[in-house]
Length: 343
Image 1 (cartoon, rainbow, N blue to C red):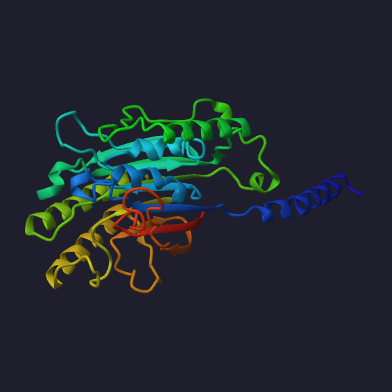
Image 2 (cartoon, rainbow, N blue to C red; image 1 turned 90 degrees about the horizontal axis):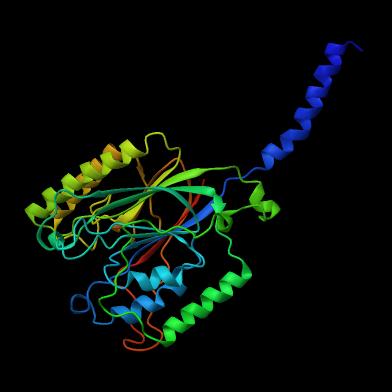
């Protein structure tokens, strides 16, 4: 056989061997939870925020990435309780210590390594939103680096959580301030060398995820602020993620793609919000995630995406307080929203 023909046959055999392996590579499915937790200062909610915050972690721990809104108080309870499963954390603190009175209430927790964090604070806010430092957090996540704690580490952290629960060390004034973002303590915690075969067939992949809470209300000034925020947030995403192959935005947007919503005061209010939503889509280059759940198509807590395959959108029942003050009442006045995607 001619040497060239032998080489070609060898190359064909190599391709035939490698093809099934390449074809076996699947997109990774991740679960992203969005929840407006209603953790406003006690008098502004139900005077039970500490108890509610302490019970939230057990209901959200199963999701890969967690986006929290309105975690204005007691966010440290949630962050610390999930440290053993979601060690990567990003928040949007106040720009300065005296104003606004509250920070953004935004928290991102992830099982996967956060490579970069970007922040923006809205330039225009009106009425009650002047008291909160609303804006957006953007994180770039490495889906090839999934946190897998050692068994002894899990036991130790569980004992620490039980100790904190037994001794109420955190008070109403306790706050989590991440001037520097919180990541895992050691590089070994994100080492995937012990991953099983199923994990190893997923190729390296990054995804940009944004969390936000936008202007509320239906007055003329609030509409103007929401329009301005739509432009600012859309451009913020476009500028920081123009090369990203996969992008997700989630949050309490206080607007949506259709006129029907229980959150709108009247037809004019609905038209202004839908218009602002269109601006956000146009500026960011993201597409609306259509919600097929009955009655939820116009929900203001929603997602926009690009470059991912949406598997489903779910609305789990809002959990109730299991013990202590407020037993039997809902943990939040807003729905939980779960987005499952393949990347």
